[in-house]
Length: 426
Image (cartoon, rainbow, N blue to C red; front, side, top):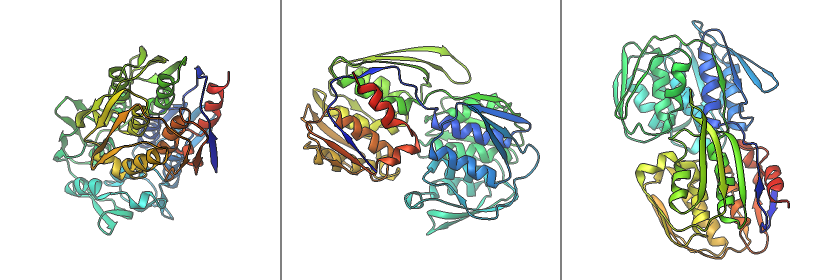
C-alpha cells in the first residue's frame, strides 16, 4: 500500500487522538493479573495492543468488548494456562519485553515470538536482569526471539538499570510482583513511568523517587477502571505539522501530559513553537488540552538526558529541523538503532532522497536548516514512526511524496491518513 502526499496550504482542526499505546498495554496486563473485573476505556485499537490482548487470551484471560470499553476478568490468585502454541507478539517490542517479566515467575512454559522485524530486536537486555532474579530463559542466539520462558520461583534483588528503557524497567517491576522479598531498581529509571503510576491504581504499593524504585513481592492487584488518554507520541505528528505550516492552528483534548512523555513539546517550545498545554485531570495520569499555532522554528539541541521523554518523536524532529533556522543536533539517541527499524539510518536515507543534507552519528544526527524538500519515494522500513514523520515532510515538499508500505501506521494510528485528509482540506 502507498499514499501520495502533496504540499499543504491549509492545516487546521480538532483531531481525535487514538488512545495512548503504552497505557493501553499496561491497562490490559495489569487488569489480567488483578482479581476481579477491570475495564480499559478508549483503548488503542492498533496492532501492537491487539498483540498484547491476543497473548493474554492465549494464556486464559477472558477479554471482551462493549463499545469503547474493554472488559478484563483477571486471573487473581489463579495461574495462567500453559499455551498450546507459540505466543505471537507481532511487531510489538513492548508486548514481548513486558510479558517476559510477567511470565518470569509464573508456573508455565511459553515461547514468545514475533514478526520478521521483532525477532531481530535485542532481548538479552531484558532476560539478563530477570535471570538474576532466578528466571529461566532460552533465547535464539542468546539475544533474540523466538525465546522460551519457563516460570521459576524468583526472588527480589537490587539492580542498577543501565539503559533508560521503560520496557526493561516494567519487565523487572512485573517480575517483582511474583518475587520473594523486595526489588530495588536504581540507575537509568527516568523513562516513561506509566507502570509506576498505574500500579497504585490497582492497589499495589510501590515507592518511587528520582533515584530508586522499590516494590515488595507478593502483592495482589485489584481490578479497576483505566481511562486511556490520547497518545502524545501520536499527537506529536500533528503538533509538528501545525508548527511549520503557515497559518496552521490545532486544538486537541484528552491528551496524556505525563512529564515523561512530553519532552517533544518542551523541545519544540525551545525551538520557538507556540504550544499551550492545560492539565484537566491529574490522576492516575495528568491529562489535558494542547493548542498549537504556526511559528517559525529555530534550530535546537537535544542531549542524552532528554531522549527517553521524546524517543519516539526524534524522526519527526529531524523532519522539523529541515524547516528550522540554524543547526539542530540530537545526541545520546543510540536506542533508535534498535527500534522497529534503525531509525537514524531510516531518517538519513529518506531525508537524502528528499534532497537534504544530514550528518549522521552513531547516536544521533546534525541538520542545518532551513533546507528545501523535494517530493520523493519514501521507504518506511515497515516502521510506523518513519511513515508518519515523512508524511509530515511531504506536506512541506515540492511535488509528490510517495509513502510506500504505509499500512504500517496501523501499529499505532489506523486512521492516520484519514485524519490527515480532514486537517488539510480547506
